[in-house]
Length: 179
Ligand SMILES: [Zn+2]
Image 1: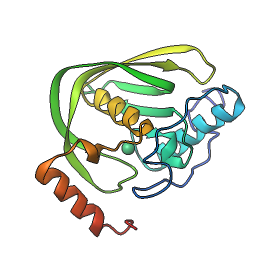
Image 2: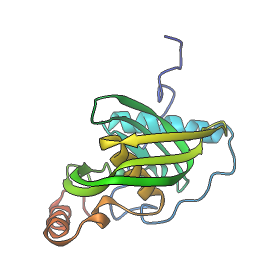
Image 3: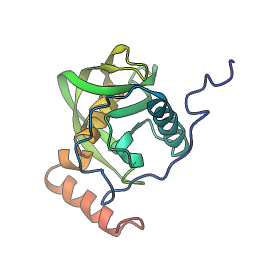
Image 4: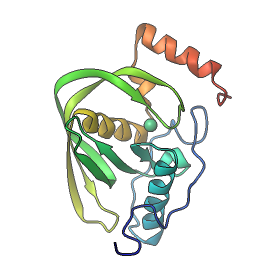
């Protein structure tokens, strides 16, 4: 395999922003500069996501309030989806709504049954500014909705209501990392 072809191989593992910290609750800024800083941010996102054994990671989870996320995520047919999107727009979200287990690297160790559409289409750009369209179904559609939400300052906890939300918030309060 060609040197450097593994995403994140040249990246730096960065500290994760946990719930309550940093820019997690802010709407991220559009990327306007498709230069080397963006390429190294994407590499750092991959390195950090893999180190934390996640399936997706948004830039504000490592303290950069920019509209970028990366993913390496299976769908319900176990097909692997690997990539990144800059300035993503969720242009379609439809199909049935499915409640399934969802977690987040910014709320480590926790998960909750969260409602998401089964099919989405995301449009955006690659790190070099080429247009890209990503189609997702099942668990991968869930991942894409989760990462798009991050860039708006939203978390999966915001999708929850009733006892599911109360239970998650209790678990957050009890967690070792909660400040
Ligand atoms: Zn997350």
